[in-house]
Image (tube, rainbow, N blue to C red; front, top):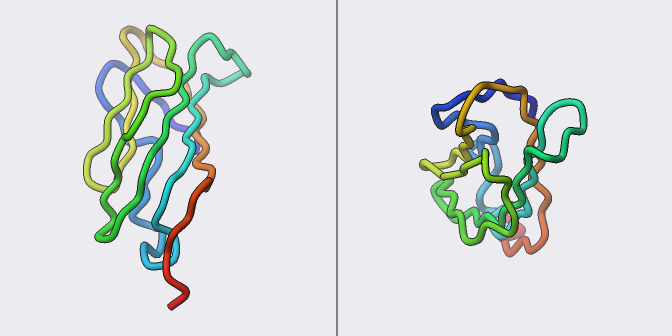
Length: 100
């Protein structure tokens, strides 16, 4: 996802679009600024449970100008100052969902 982010928490990934019966489990979420500027970055371990609830289990690394939180099914980030387009990717690393 490519999202313009400023100093207020902004949804960058919406996990409610996933079928939680088949997609619940752990995701590695990466966030980086546009233009491959990796100085603005974050790497997070996120869990998706039933009812499209997302949990931020661990911040693996994060630059000082990025903060992350979750709200319902939304993974959100903000910058400490200014604004930029951030790119986010959710990579499934431990899916424990059902086949039905």
